Image 1 (cartoon, rainbow, N blue to C red):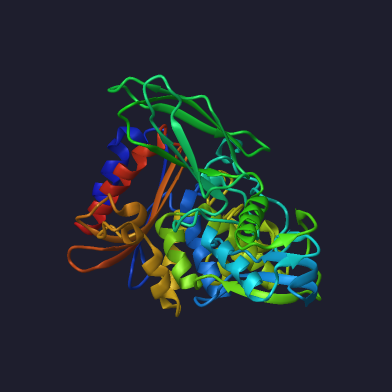
Image 2: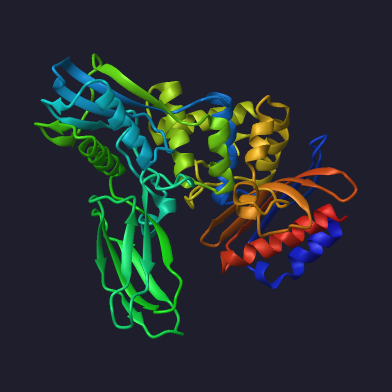
Length: 451
C-alpha cells in the first residue's frame, strides 16, 4: 500500500507543486499505517464539519432541539392584544414558510384578531455578526455563504437557511425569461436583464445580489429550449426575511395591527404564546453533513457558545469546539480554527489530528448518529449518499468531502475488500483546480481498500 501511494503522489501530474497530506490508521487499534505530510497543517475545507458535528453531539446531545417562540406583551381582551407581538428566534435553521403559517395560526387560536402595538422580530439569541471573518466576499450572495441569524428561513428541505430559490425559465425568443422567487416574498426584488435566445444555443446566465441590498440581478442569455435554471441565493439580513413571511401569514389570517413591523428585543416578562421546536440534532445532522450545509455549521457553533457561555458568537462557540477537540484527543496547539464550516482559508488542521479524532469518537455513545450522518459511497439516494453519491460506488466508505478554491479533502471510514477497517484523512492543498481533487482522492481510497 505504501509503495502504491508513494508512486501515485510522486507521479500524479496534478499533484506537482501542490501539498498532499495523507493519514491512514487501523480502524480497530488507531495505529498509524501510513502518513505523507500527516503532521503538516493544511486547509481542511468542509472536513472542518467533522469537528463541528462531534462537538455539537458532545455538548448539545443527539436529542437537542432548536426553539422559536411567539410571545406577547400586554393583555388580551375582546380579541385585542394591547401590546406588542414578538417572534423570537433561537437559531432554528429548519424553519420553512409553513412554520410561519403555523405561528400565525397559533396567534389566531389564542383569540387575537387585532394587535394594538408592533410586530417585532427578535434575533438577539445570537450576536449580530452575520458573516464569519474568513468568508471570501464573493461568496456572500451564494447559499453556502448565507448570513447567520438566530431567526432565519429555509426555502426547502435542504434547509439552506437564509436563502431564496431563484428560478429562470425561457420565454419566446427575444423576450425576457420568466423569473420566480420562492418563497414568495417582497423582501427580495429581481432586476431581470437577461434575454431568451434562439433554440439550440448555450445557456449563459449570471445571477448576483447587490451587496447590502436584496436586489438580485440576472444577466446573460438562455435559449428558448433550455431547461429552467435554479439558484439558491443568500438574502441580506435574514431576520427581516423571516419577519416578512410572518407578516404575510398574519395578514392571511386576517390579523391586523396598529403599529410597525420591525426588529427588536422581547422583554424578559413577555408571555410565551407558542413554542415551535425543530427536529432533534440527530436528524438535523443528516442534511448538515450529507449535503455539507455551511449555515448549519455556523449556527451550531453559535449555539454551543450560547449554551456554554451564554453568548451566541463565533468567538465563544469556537472556544467550545476547541475545548471539545482537546477532550477528544486532538492537539489544539497544532491547529487553527476560524469557523465551523471550513469555508475560511485560515483554518488549518494536520491530517494526523483529523484521523485521530475519527478514531477516538468511535467509542462515544453518539457515534452511530455521527457515522450515519456522513456521506455514503454505496448509496445513490441524496440523503444517504450525499456528496459521495456519484463517487466510488464500487467501494464502501463513509466520509466527509470538502472543497474550497485550490483545496479538496476527504476524511472518514473505509472497509477493505478483506474486511479490514481503516480511518483516513486526505487533504490536497494548493491545487491549480480543486475539481481535480476528487479523482485523485478516489484513487487513493481504492488503493487503500483493494490492498
